[in-house]
Image 1 (cartoon, helix red, strand yellow):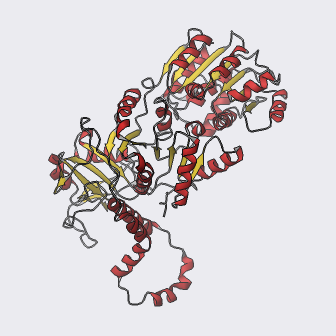
Image 2: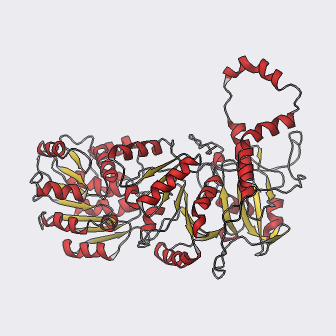
Image 3: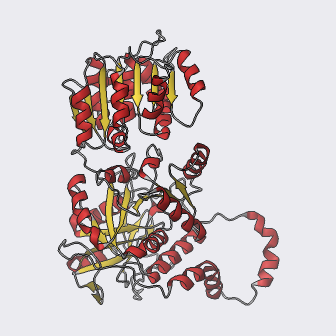
Length: 588
């Protein structure tokens, strides 16, 4: 594989790369860095969020800058304060061994006088938001008439946010002979206009199809009534106990309202929108990064620059006004090689928009049903049992055990387990046991896997839903579990669908013709000495009621016989049994 040294980077940058632990360049880095180092050229690069774009322009920019000169030579424009600070921080890490190189962030919400002082002390590279940059140019606080390089990062988003005129004004203050590098996730007409007006014969780089989404994200949509959006959001959260998500709303008002309702209902949630002060936004983002907030409700503008790699779900509470913006939203998850899920809550009248988005991102959506109340209860029950099993014992309780034994005297093992589970489970059951079905029938011409009525184990569309006793804590996500099942059972990738991975268990579907093969394959099947059990789920929605036929399940004293064994490796579809270092708890 191509290493960073082969790209033409100098020793100072290679030493920084080694410190950061980077080993192999991403595709966008491989395609841009050598070109930018070897030539003075304009460039248009189309690549999704999370593909390493900052290093793609940051490495060549730092190497080309003359650190001995105090003149401002490079300008980077980004849409938000958060992204501005993120880029600045990353560039400073890349340039740690470049003596005398100063990188200054210019953004609103901070002292303009202090930022002006930093520039006067000498800033070879300035990273700025368009609004503050235009303001400082107008006040004569900054001089960009001699810059050699201008980078427009997240160009499509800057234009979506209404910065077109500001960008034109800023670029008009720069020399014509500079190199302009434009990086964008999508290529709307406004970006093309900027490219044509301010760039000369730019070199073009495209990572994946134009405007396409990344293949590490699974796209799902749920059709509900307009008044049931919030209830649907709650059920999706409860059906995914380990969720760590960004929930997108169209307006600041809706963002605040949804966040307040979630907090009132006991969820770890927070709001992020333009009406918050900078201090409030910083507090929210710090809590989100520490996972003290599990559901961050945000507007599209405020969410720009969120640099968190392990977001499990993006939930579109409402679709964006600009359909292309969906690409940015879904790009918040499935980053850095990890997988993620993008969920869309829509009404029947919005179904046509799904097809439009599919055409833009070049990926198909899966139609899904909002889980029923009973299914959520079952998922939470399994999650709670797993949480109890995996809880580390606090030895301090030993001093209290005699008294506790006295309190619990007379309870047998089964009754004690029921009582422990009921402490937490009862609240779910009391709420969900009688709630209505939120699902609204969608168009049936898509041929997808909406969940119809069933007879016995087989649904009316000919599929079978299974329960398997492995999940996230075993190192699986929806992609790797699908690969593991496909390789183990030896069936096609498209023959496995609706793979839903929870903390310690999962569900998946196959066509009925594979039922016997699935069950026979996992008869006495072991992975690293542990039995992996697959059973048919009796719940039509896949919530998890398993078959009462326990004949295939092995007990502790059934240790003899010939077993099928597999081991998990660290790559591909087979995973090690190593658990994630950071476990996610449920909401309750």
